[in-house]
Length: 348
Image (cartoon, rainbow, N blue to C red):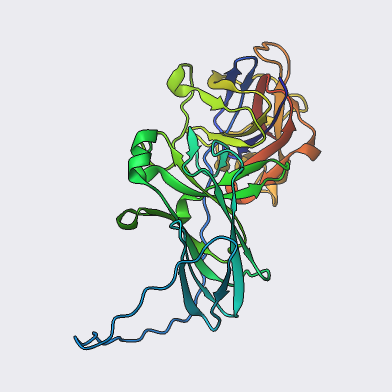
């Protein structure tokens, strides 16, 4: 079986290794929780009062519904464009410039089980096509949201709770693999209108899919260490990328030709390390072991040894293949073809 993996290990790690087993192989890993970042912007807004309509006022006609492959005018000067479509799709945006957009239908999209950005599975597609939005020019200056319609009756038949619906955006990751990217911080379920939104968009160009997760718990679901069905990560074979994140932040991003299951177990003790590296427990230990050196994170390395080894040393993987994601407190190891072995994070 041939797979492509990357593993994200955190820079604050317990002094243990992790043993994961698939139907064919095992791995041990170190990891920690990731941190999130937030950013803020200041913007000016103008509020105006609107008087209530008098009984004699003429009713405002409904806006005509748009259809696929139709050119939709976008108002400029930050005026609101609120456009509903015949199938229930809704676009709501503000643009500084007059523009146009076209929405087309992709009837053969990437399957809905290939998802990044929210841990937990299984994800499924809730529509039999995706929506492709294309503006007449590249625009990164919008205030926009997209709403995709869902059918509550259909969700019930599929075993998907309304709170577990998502808008996925098709993205290509660093390895070239494709997946539907979901973002918990930009998701909003509008129950009264049977629509799920993605908000805080500055650009609309892209492909969108309505996704659902067949679990009772909403939002992120983190995997527990150990054996058993409830602690198994089920990887689906196919063209897309799947992610799984464990309770301490260890994350796998996997693309596989064939399906397999994977369990991860903790293994106490690290043992000998080639080159004299020391395993980490937390960020404070990183500062202590490097004497608060500037750019201490550059001395971090992921090391590997054979599965179930007792006397073999951990050997750092090639530094050129590792990437320090400082804003996430993670070390990423891309391009792995085989997961057999034990892994630990060291400071040199």
